[in-house]
Length: 110
Image 1 (cartoon, rainbow, N blue to C red):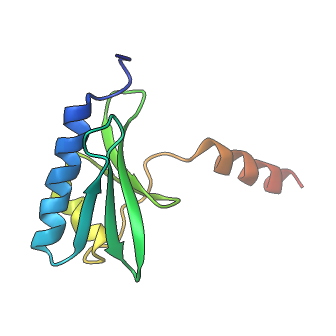
Image 2: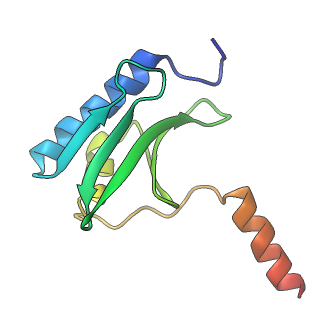
């Protein structure tokens, strides 16, 4: 298995912990594809269904990501759940997506 991918069990267990916390806060969440290498947690928030996945960055840190810009460290399950439920404002992104950075640079150059 690649060094950049967490094991199936760690992705699944992180999403299951997030699901439990979301349920505790009163949100609706369903863990799908839990027997695969790519489980997805679907959360009903803001009047829509939002998929949440776990990724590992180049430094080895695991993150919950959702939507276009939603992210939270996987080590902060309670904080991620609070953000998803709208109880806390989302944290400022710790990184800029490469595509967004290129677009911003092009706009500045124009």
